[in-house]
Image (cartoon, rainbow, N blue to C red; front, top):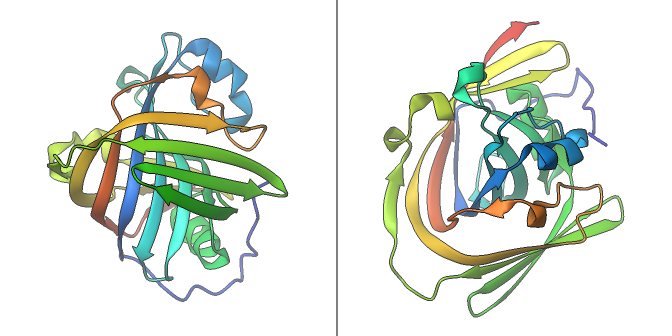
Length: 223
């Protein structure tokens, strides 16, 4: 259940935010039947299926301190003329929940993250209200990587629109970093915490050992 922050909660760190960390970018092709099965997570409908991204992030430096994050970045078909959105997201600190909801309309929920790493395998356990799920990720042994910048991506894909507490928020993050290929991703015990992406088709996905990200102020309008 999303933690609703009282409207009079003070904000201590206003945008733009500059953040740094490392991340996993998981690209999936989801079918209409997958979308139907995961309807409680508010994925946009699609008669043909489409690509969505799951991001697992460790922010080492942010205006509100280090925190972890798991989210779905939903990219509806352009023919539907809908912008991208974040329908589901967990973070590891209360202060990130507060600022994410009130500054960008992002429906952040609080969760506990635990990390284990052995050689090229990373295991992240996410606990939400005493329910635990696990993501197991295997990095490539190759040290090859390539540079990516938000300027290389169509602007429409980076425009995010959120609806929250009677308002609409729109913003376009900017980022840069280097990507290296992931070999394998496994999902375990997702329950009702997160969609079971083991039932979706994993496309080429990446580990980002270091990135920088800028979150600008959102344009906010009443619905």
